[in-house]
Amino acid sequence: MPLLDVRDLSVTFARRGQRTVRAVDGVSFGVHAGEVVGLVGESGCGKSVTSLAIMGLLPKQRGVTIDGVADFDGTDLLKTDARAMRDIRGRDVAMIFQDPLSSLNPVVPIGVQVTEVLTRHRGMRGEAATKEATALLDRVGIPDPARRLKEYPHQLSGGMRQRALIAMAVACKPRLLIADEPTTALDVTIQAQILELLKELVRDSGTALIMITHDLGVVAGMCDTVNVLYAGRVIENARRKPLFYEPRHPYTTGLLRSVPRLDAGRGTPLNPIRGSVRDVLPWPDGCAFAPRCDRRVDACVGEPPALVVGYDGHGYRCVNPTPQGAQP
Image (cartoon, rainbow, N blue to C red; front, side, top):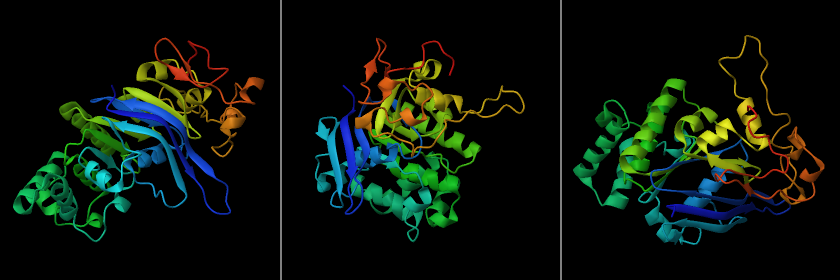
């Protein structure tokens, strides 16, 4: 059984006088202990909203409706009250947010923010908490951790702020870690260091990791299983190698073809997906990707495509998929 089993998760935003938006539409996936599962797609496909719903961080009183199941080791996180979720967050389930500068409190020293997690969930105080916080910063590769504990977020570089967030997330050795684009806005060298750090955490502690990203290079180097999202739905899911070698959904194929290749000749034009994420068809009316799809046929419009699952567990929602054996 997966440690986290998400079934038919839907998130709807409704505002007075405006059109209702379904940001997540029936998303289902599972994560086992020690496994890295990727949620992949362009901006606006529902990746971050999915993670925020699982963490219980969406404001349910402000026109937000959440349906479905997020079973975490027998506990439905979507039905858990706020008091119980405060005990689960940070201790059993933790999250690394996308922008460390806006996620950290700008007027509170780093040390106070790290020790707060240790005090809340591990009962550590005083010198013991400070010593553990220093060890955590040292573990994530922050130089001179004792001095950094006294500094404020604006005094740290982007890479150090991201490492501080990771230190806070792993302080209680959570069983599930959600990383929401943890390498965004970081240079390539720091990206590699952050990803290697996350690999070590999964390998050493058996933590289950959900990696949210639009970077297929990160997916290729990190993920065991990949879920490709488009317009709030999972349109393809498979193990990493089958997805890269034999993608079936035209959207996944387009994502792979749009990645610049080092072996391409000088002056070779890029191959982007035409249109934009705004060119979308409502799912009840057919395939949402149909307005941008080069393999569109009449059957793509009229009703949403069902999820087709092959013998190897490779699933996709498409009535005219990319032929098997075709190079992405």
